[in-house]
Length: 330
Ligand code: TRP
Image 1: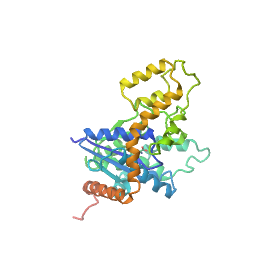
Image 2: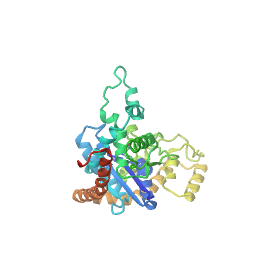
Image 3: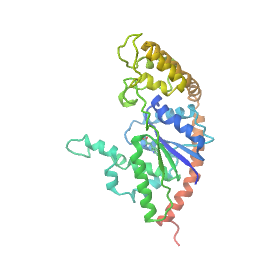
Image 4: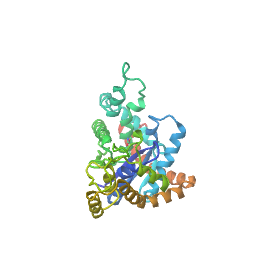
């Protein structure tokens, strides 16, 4: 069977280097040994928690640019906006009709949202949030994806996708493909400036697409202990050291370890880290600067991507509708 990878990128905010290391770079790398790859901007997912239309619009652009600038080749992958493939939403409804409500009650994201409510557990909870995993299942099953790269927080959604697909296949006809997750952050949690996981919600991110100057300023803000230059530094549980690992090879890591043992000054370690990160990000930044002025180019590229994706989706939704009895009268 063909190996078809697919992953969705929720369009909130502007990608940071945690997204780059954890999702963008490995996904692009993975396209090299897959028969086909699908990357899409999950804009319908992004409206679940964000009702600010300007911020949605900006995010879609920035996220698209981040992927393209980082080396995603739209000629070798399917790259599209979820909202440009309406068959996904048709499938979402069909799947809603075979998904047990009890299954959705167990979703982590929904449970986390209800658990902070005191009197009314459903306060502030929309049907969108509740049935989010069904939309994700539709994204995946629409294209017979075999492998889905995701963060560990999404593994439960993949299990739900498999459950939903199996239920459909049992009720109707075995035409949906059960996907396998590829867990991307298994061993590698990228630390942010304060040492906690890099995340926009912690305000500890290092930007991907900002100028060299801002990048440097950000790296210089990494929190360290107060050991003086000349005092040996412990590389375990060190934010700078963990970040280095994502940008340099093993032999360079050895000399960095040696510098730690010999008591490198934190300022110098940060300077070196900045240079390593900057070497990799410079071409990405240049590409971003070049593309960001050209909205027509991005719009055309996405609409081409959607056209190609829809060719597949239309076929599939036809089969699915036939299986459930929504078809020509005969
Ligand atoms: N929910 C995913 C996230 O927040 C994004 C996403 C939407 C996705 N649809 C998908 C990921 C389908 C993989 C496959 O990260």
